[in-house]
Image (cartoon, rainbow, N blue to C red; front, side, top):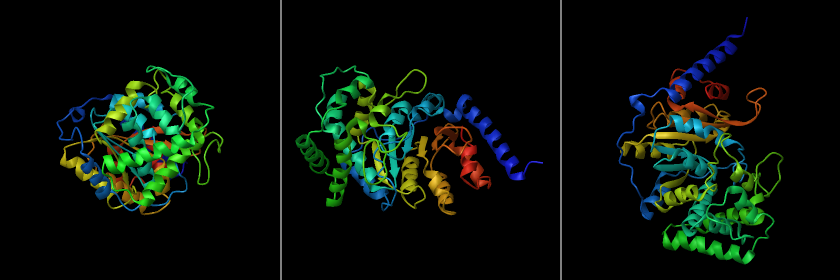
Length: 377
């Protein structure tokens, strides 16, 4: 006899696989594109107003998390493109990997929600550098505070771009000049009201790119560079692909960079400070989307749920918050699952229909993190 809990989880996983298949490959009227009233552009004051009114107080996380550590995350993009609603709204967490998902999913608007205020400041740094940089070569020179070794071309691939900056020493004068240009752009040109602590936070993030360049990798507090075995570098992430035919990284082609730059210029990538289990950020986004008859196309949660399930109430509050979001049967969770949750499987990205997870939550079928992973494929 198998234990009842094992049988329950197996049945849940089988049912989830069937539902995911239907969601990905069975077209219904629910997935048809509907009219919405999302803006084609936000003013600078509207953009900053969203950040200040939707955000919550910042919280603690054990890592600076200036760069993604999720190697291989592009592999779910081809499947997502078959399922998600065109022109929906993207929700995400963390730093630059969100830009690559946005390239793949082509939403009208995006919200990046992270418990760390530093993450919001990092996105403002990216925003300023992109708005000030006409192309990828100029952007990377400013991001890393380095002059490229070769002139390069507009159609350079990711590997060629990385090679331009590998082994190049950082320029301290360029760093200070660019930092002051970024702060002037954000505070004077855009009119964002940054505190002295915010300015120092931007300096802290920017210095990580200055110190490590293309060798920057995910670290815990206290240092940058190749500190952890198996953590991909900035240059390596730029050169990954979806495992089939295409590199979706936002720096892999000039057109992909320009797509993200345009969204930044239009103030349509909005970084917020918020706890997934908090009372304000997610619910504020949900209310805004409902006001504009918009639907979430994808919600990238990384492995945040793993931390939420460490508290008996936080994970429940998170799913209660998700219930307020406008979704349809094509709306997807994107999760990054660390090695160890599935026997003999490496860390990887997984998908699950948001509506199916909420359906299971409402009926008491989610009791722990394993149940959420069991619904993801």
